[in-house]
Picture 1 (cartoon, helix red, strand yellow):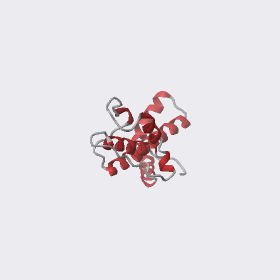
Picture 2 (cartoon, one colour; picture 1 turned 30 degrees about the vertical axis):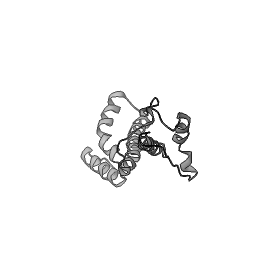
Picture 3 (cartoon, helix red, strand yellow; picture 1 turned 180 degrees about the vertical axis):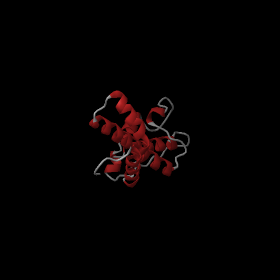
Picture 4 (cartoon, helix red, strand yellow; picture 1 turned 135 degrees about the vertical axis):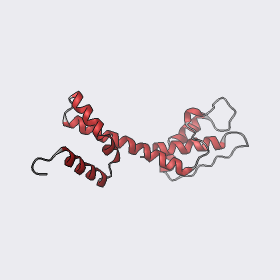
Length: 136
């Protein structure tokens, strides 16, 4: 942009550009981070880093949340919620190995076949949640 521009015009152009670039978090957090940067004396790089980190974090969260919603799991079980004291046919080392999700990279299937009430659904959901969270 050439020549002086008033704050309102600058704000409108910035808002339009952020919409076009699809940076909603930057657009939403920009005013507050400007105030914080001015108050704390951030340099341009620190300010830009804060803006972009906010956008990246929101996108990462979305990259996990969307597939989890799409999977329609009954519950969102995680590894730390597994009850290791309950009798199960699958052992902790097996779960730890499956939780690395290497079988996905190798294109292998996993079949969990155990009697009723041994936690197959809970374990399967746990592995599904882990796979989504490890997604690059």
